[in-house]
Image (cartoon, rainbow, N blue to C red):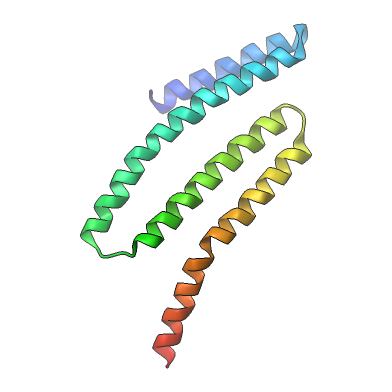
Length: 128
């Protein structure tokens, strides 16, 4: 599937959800969630390419494996948080979606703390 296919799938899902909203509102939400899950799992399969590319870059230059793991965790947290937040906002629960976004941002910050500590350690070694 290409970006065009995913875009058409998303638009078709949204248009069908609008039609179903007039009949039974909850069916529209279910349809949007189902289309969102299809797109989500297709996006997860694209991560395989990203992981392979990162490993190839790691073979060219010496990087600490921890940095790549943190990067992948940050990508995963961001993707899941944005997806979940979007579903909640589409369902009419914007405040819940905003809370998920805030939690996602805090999680990314928490996961990135080892990188910050390594950076500070490197700066301290240069200054000493």
